Image 1 (tube, rainbow, N blue to C red):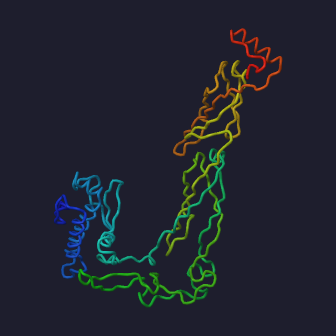
Image 2: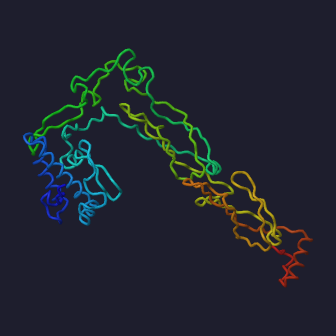
Image 3: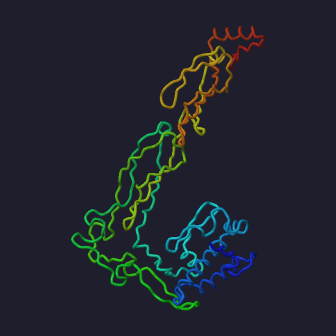
Length: 384
């Protein structure tokens, strides 16, 4: 296999060339080698044109140019080395393998005039299948729903095919007719005069809007659009462990596609309501548990409420200080990426009584005396 030519050599520029110099060189060579202006030697000119476009696609991108300057054609993934289909090529970038369209490159330099590359037609938005648009909604969950998972019904406002006309847009009993201007292709070819000379172009048909057909008798229900807006109830399965701010994507529940294209997706931005008792920290559940002064002093067995409604019996040792943390393994949130569950962490908060009976005050005073503590002023009490 012949070695690939240096991209700077292909464009006839130095390695220190500016962006403007790169673009100027490409404009000149693209005009020189464009297949539609070299009908006598179309095959060779197309090969040259693709080589020039490939070089420009790399050197006009700062990231790709930096990688090329460092590694040359042996950069990870190579440059312009992935296959081609029609006029579309695949190349490496810092984010992985991207695709680029020679028509896109040419239009970015020459203003987008709908050229025909080796039989690949220019833009024709109305005649090719296109995926429908995505729809985004917010979905509100309780803390428990995010913890346990749930099934929710979401009202989605979107377009569906009009039933009377079966999505054609034409009045029942009729059908769309072929456009007389483009003969059903959705495109019209023209030759325009530019500073570069005469250049053939392919543009969207203005009569049919690129659809290739015209509706002479529109459907009354959809006014010829072929679709109507409806509100649909969609059952959504919420996975256990979903977190606030995450987006849940439900495939195929978005807007209708065109020309047989698939529906878009339904994206649900999750909003989890705050809980009066529990908090979340990653996959952990955090909770403050109040205990009495005597429980903390003497030790006690506590019933700790769990998010799922169950209770766990946990013993705390005598002398437990306020702020002490205890962990219950595997009682936290489900991790969305594996079968692992976080822990339930509760913090002991010692509650000091605000009011005491005379007997309680005497007992605590005696306790303070045995511990060589300064007894409290009777007027204010031991706990102030």
